[in-house]
Image (cartoon, rainbow, N blue to C red):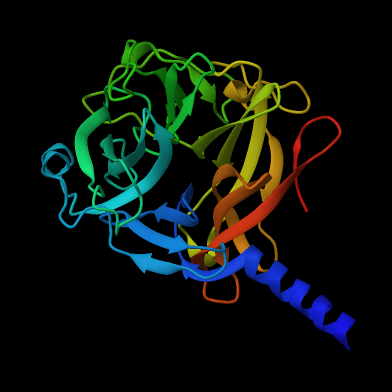
Amino acid sequence: MIQLFFITLTILFSSLLYGQDIRVHDPVMAKHNDTYYLFCTGRGISVWSSTDLLSWEREQPVFSEAPQWALEAVKGFRGHIWAPDISFFNGKYYLYYSVSAFGKNTSCIGLVTNPTLDPYDPDFLWTDHGKVIQSFPGKTNWNAIDPNLIVAEDGTPYLSFGSFWDGLKLVKMNKDATIPAEDINAIPTIASRKKSSSNINPPSIDNNPVDAGGNAIEAPFIFKKGDYYYLFASIDYCCKGVNSTYKMIVGRSKTIPGPYLDKEGKNMATGGGSLLLKGNEDWHGVGHNSTYNFNGKDYLVFHGYDAHDNGRPKLLIKEMHWDTEGWPVIK
């Protein structure tokens, strides 16, 4: 009877760890003291907290009002902020965020910082640093959304970002990681579904925006493990409920700038990328992942479209293992 109890408890814990019944999109996470803080797409940037990765409590959003600079930069923006990214850097928490018109590269990446994530700490205060990067229809063949900060061993910060168009981009940042430290118009593509990729931004045609086309890739996230930097990305289509086809791919490099190669040695910049995880009968598409090491374990944090709840996006967390060749495995 006692053995049966523990077997039941283990099954319940595994189920809860895999699919948790809170609606989120584009989740990222940080652990501050003994609490996990989750940030995701939502009005003002949605925030959740948990002490066990199982039970989650909704916190106040990062912004109580839409940033004025974003209202001016992106016509039609009303405060619904996409795809944040949270990191501890330079002695404070850096939260990058995306402001965009849907389906267009009328987009900006902003930055807000805080010395603590504990809302009861007297030092708790979000300070907005405004626009970091902006993309323009017909001028830039990339999209300034889905940021992710990665810091090299020498302390140099890099920001990966992008979706569709020419694919995912990588730019070296200044020492404070507040603005690019190199020409934004000549930054490389690090991942694309195209078999060939140009790093030159094409001119507009009759003043019309360059079409995103079928290059369905977004949400870069770079994670250091051992001797490699692993680039995770999401391909195919999110945001379609039961018709979502989201899935995750991965490649790796010994340097942050790349190239990132998959298991077959194919460059992710020209269509490579090994499949990590895809949807099944329970989840219509899974993706927009972030990756962390908490308490000695590696975790993949992402969202999936619940097949048993009309395709609503929900939080998923899976422990990530590694095979003998050093590639991530999700059991």
